[in-house]
Amino acid sequence: MYDAVIIGAGSAGLMCAARLVSNGVKNFVVLDSNSKPGKKLAVTGNGRCNLTNLELEKDLYYTDDHKLLDSVISRFTVIDTINFFEKTLGLKTVNKDELVYPRELKSSAVIDVLRLYIPLECFVFDSKVTSIRKEDDYFVVEADREYRSSNIVIATGGRSYVNTGSDGSGYKLLASLVPQDCFVPLSPSLVQLKTSDRDLKALTGYRFSCTIRLVCNGDEKACETGELLFTDYGISGICTMQLSRYLESGKNTIVVDFLDKDEDIIRSCIENFPERDTRDALAGVLPGVLTDIVLKRIGVKKLVSNNEIDRFISELHEFGINISGTNGLDNAQVTRGGLKLSSLDENLQNKLIKGLYVCGEVVNVDGPCGGYNLQWAWSSSVIVADQISRSIV
Image 1: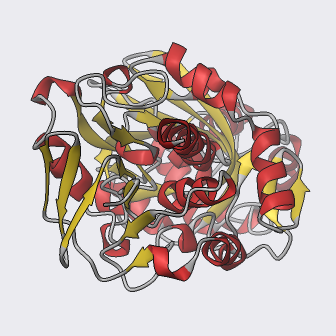
Image 2 (image 1 turned 180 degrees about the vertical axis):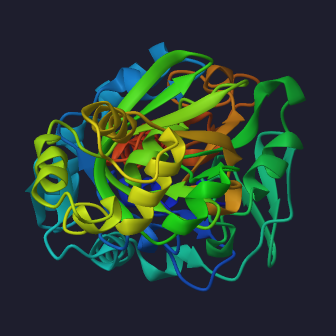
C-alpha cells in the first residue's frame, strides 16, 4: 500500500514527487506510459524551458474558478518556484527580461534535477494506467500491475502534443470517477491559425517582425508584437499563438502592421526610383511577393500618385487576414478545458472523492506563452504534495 500514486511523469507529476521527497515522504510511486520522464517538458520553450515569469499576471489565465487559481499560485509563487529549483533541486536559473530559464537554456537540465532528486525506485515507466477504482478507503490502480494507495494524483497532462504521451488519458480516468458535468470541453490553446485567403499562399515561409491585432466580430480583442510566420495553412509564431487564445465564434480577423511607424521609407523609395516598377523600387524594403499582394489588394499595378502611395501604406498598416480556424490539439502547445477547477477544493482534492487529487494541464486552467502554464504545473502540484504530506503524518 502506497501513500500516493502519481499518474504522469511530466512537469506536474515530477514536481509533485519532488515536493513529496522534500517533505520527507518516500512511500509513493510515479507511473508513466513513456520510457523516461519529462518527454513533453523536453520540448517546452523550443527545448529551452521557460520555467516561469517574473511579471506573471494571474488574471491572464483562463479558468472556471479564478479565486481558487489565485489562491493556489499565491501559496506557491513565482519566487517560491525559483527558490525551490535553485536551493532544493540545485538548478541555476537566468533571467531574460521577465522570463526565467535554466542557466544552460536546456529543458534537459530541468528534467535532470527533478529526476535525480526523486529516488529511482519511485519510478515505473512503460506503465499505462487503464483504470482506477475506489475500494473502501483506498484506490486500486490497474497498470503494468495493480497498485493500491490512499491517495491518487492525476498529473497526466492535457491532450496537446499527443506524441509525447499527452494523449488525454487522464480525462478518461477522471471521467470514470466523477460526473460528466465536472468537465469543460477540450479545445486547442496557443495554436497556429488557419486562413482561406488564397493570395497569402505566396508568402509561405516568410517571417516578419510586426504588430498584429485580433478583431472578433468588429471588436479588437488583443494585440501582440513579435515574429509572424506565414505557412501553407495560415500563420504561426508566438504572437499568433498568443492571440489564438482570444478567438470567438463568428468573424475573426488578424490585422497586421508591417510598417509600425516607419512609412517614410516607402515614400522615399518610390520617389528615388520613379522609373522602376513598384516591386523593384521597394526591393530593399519589402519582399516582392508582399508588394505584389498589396498592390493587387488596392487595385493598382504601379504606385504613381500620392493617393496610391497613401493607400499602399495604409494597407501595409492594416493588412487583414481572415481566420478560418485553428490547427488541432495535436499542434497546440496547451489544452483548454478539462476538469473544472471549481470541482476541486482549496488543496486540489476532488470535492466528491477523498484522496483524489488533480494538478497541471488536465485541470481547466491555461495561460499565455511565457512560463504561465509551467507555473500552474509547479504551483498546483506543490499544493497537492503538501496536502498529501499533511494527511499521512
